[in-house]
Length: 335
Image (cartoon, rainbow, N blue to C red; front, side, top):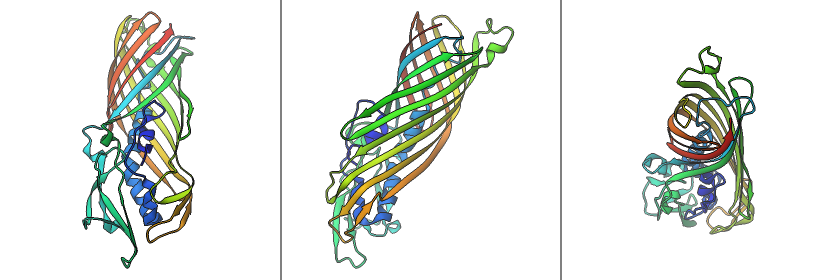
């Protein structure tokens, strides 16, 4: 699907990529076939976005003191270069009503929104085989040598009562002719070592964290091969919860931290607009044809390091999960 796969991964950063075709061309095969294909095509990208949204909250387990403040920019990459199972899925024509492969195969691996398989043609035909229309299935990000889902946002932390810090993250809404995307989130960190009698003497801090992140995105993809219409677009919503335990050293300049947690998220994708199929055996008009909903979740574990030089801070970390994530940030703060 032209640019949509990259929109899902980019989450508001500056990169936009392309795929080779439009998923909405599948509507020529009928509503059921189009929804089945689109669900399998988008599923790995939606999972990767859930993990990307739920990550990169912490760079220390130590809560800021009362009125302590920090603001910074965080960028992350959810990699899938070696995850071949995320780049393709098996399309079995027996599960489709009106779709077959042009070369006569009954099943074969085809690209997901993250994949690189190209040049795979399918044919839409009626039950008698009298009328047909052929087109190429879409490929994905790897075909453009992109093997990660990037994200970027601003994040703020403010210290409250003893051992407690609240956090907020946001991406101001980006609105262009084709793309609209925005992000916000809130979280709370509590440093349990602040309650111990010898907390100032302990070499480490231990804390717990809960965070919520929400993303809204839309992409206008009206131009297609043989489907006319108006206001053709995809709207996606992501809601992600993060639960983490964290431990970090308490040194004045350079520190190390680790996290263990669980990310849970839900994605909802709506295919909206008017679609007039003007070629092939099933010429009809669809309005807001279908929606896709998906839930994901899994355990995460990460390690990182943080450098503090006066008001200036740098950090970088790596998280093991279903999609491994590298993140880095630069921030400014006091106390």
